[in-house]
Amino acid sequence: MANYEIEEFCCEDCLADNVINAMFCVSELKGDDYSSACILCKEDLAEKLLKIFSNTEVNGFEFNIEYINFDKTDYDCEYAVMIDTDGSLSVDKAYFEDGELQTFGEDLVFISDECNSKLFINQISFDEDAVHTFTFKDDEDEEFDVSDFKCDGDCENCDLNDDDGDEFEEFNDVITTEWYELIEKIVDDILAKKLCR
Image (cartoon, rainbow, N blue to C red; front, side, top):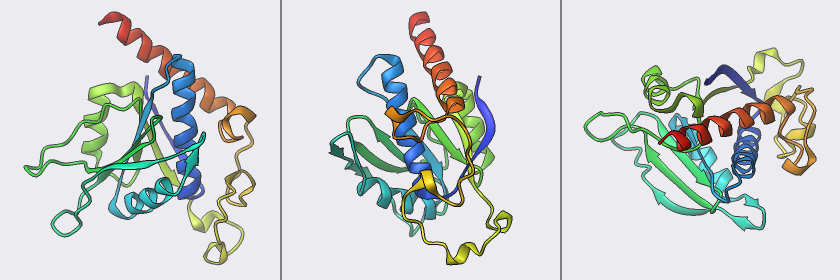
């Protein structure tokens, strides 16, 4: 069953950290060296994530850009930012040129709450267990002026992060108990589907 509760993140760096760690957690729980994740989002977030991932080192390797289809001139719809445990980083348009939706088959698919609902419906009809929705915390809810805040990339100690969950050190202190249990469920569902085929 998909996680239709919207997960809140304090910033783009925190989102990227959580996606990377969830992807490696899925890989470990599957007992497989390979897993993948996709983030469906608007152009500005896709551009920020491309910069973050291309400057991130994980488990001794950096993400390498494999494929970029990021043409902003004649396209104003959503993009898919895709990473995998082999270190591949790709960006593609969420819609084909004829207006048809692409379907993304990564182990984890994170969809921004700013995306068109057609993307969400398309993805859950393909594999609802992989789909997760997210948003960023509203600046107006904070007790201080967020415009003065500069992100230092330390999401664990971030003033905008109020997560009180238990954390697992082996996943860089980012994965909470709730996340871990959700990922275990996703892996069980993935393995059950593969056994049924």
